[in-house]
Image (cartoon, rainbow, N blue to C red):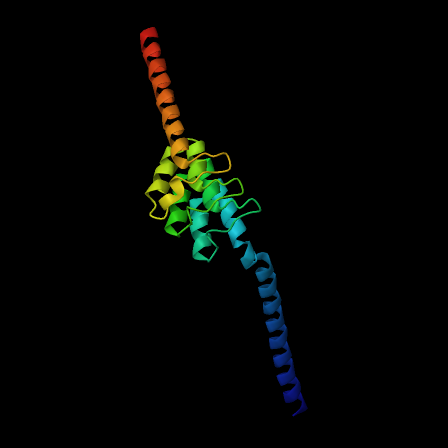
Length: 173
């Protein structure tokens, strides 16, 4: 009978060891996953890089869409400034606030217009939540409307220059 008890002990202790190994593996795996609080920062980085797939993934996991850095720059600001159209669309689908201003008073629309990303600006302007932020001024006294007009004029000038260059090239051939 003594051997029967030893056999039961060895089976239970081997199970305990296996359970211990599994829990250690689980803890190691959990330690590698980012803490929940970094979701906003990760979203900001993904938006800055124009990684719309990663943004969607993070937002589905609950990352705060309007998280901002120390300058109050949100993911929408970053994507708009750089001209990542698909990323801007993803952020808007997840209800990013288009009216938020960074420390310089710029909204995402200000940044998109200033950098001549008219496609991004168009999407932002079609957003239902944009409202009166078109007329809001930033710290330099610029409105989105003024910046958009400048961007459109710049685009017209660039189109004219490109047309002239094509005409010269055709004449030279």
